[in-house]
Image (cartoon, rainbow, N blue to C red; front, side, top):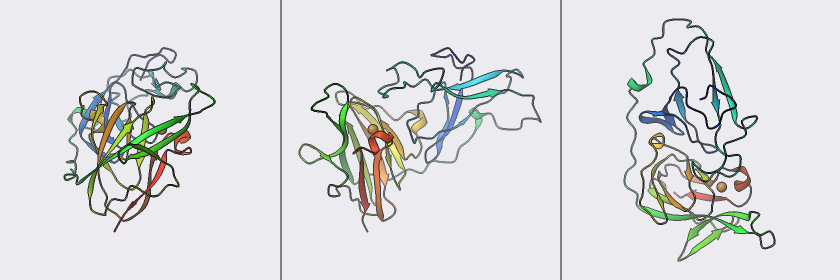
Length: 258
Ligand SMILES: [Cu+2]
């Protein structure tokens, strides 16, 4: 949040206290100065306006780039005149005594933990350049699987992800593209296990990701791992949640088998 609409990057005026992610509460409240959200990700946050002078105006702003998101530090912030604006808060007078628990002292319900995974699925986020328009961008954004080598799988190709109901698996998203992709899996909630650059050490999920989720940002040239319990039989999909990608070829069916 910023006191000045036009200045980017802005100085945070108040902390955000995140208490929940896509699938429910986090283990404990997390104090943040900024929040990274991909399309389809959700966060439950508390902002404590205690002590802010009446009449103060504060702004929730978007500082992610207007172009493809790659990393937290890549790209110019969104246009402050348009896409960089989200919401304005005008602080009014206190209406009644504030009896709410301060966010740093909130106790959240215990987090359910998934058991060990019995299968590991290496999956790929891929793209194919246009033969005629080199350097302009990919012609096709795709998902893929590993069968001795990375093989793209189109929407209409035979089903390859078919976990048995009641099993727990690890899915690895190997992001072979230069962009980040918010990967969304229908029906199930998952734990983010870790992220690892193709050459480098694994790092644990971000503090705001330590709860059940259904969407995870897979950063470029990294392996992002999630652990899932497939609890209900049926046919579902997994896909990138960037609309241009999911409407291209970055969506695949999967089936939870009886
Ligand atoms: Cu994508």
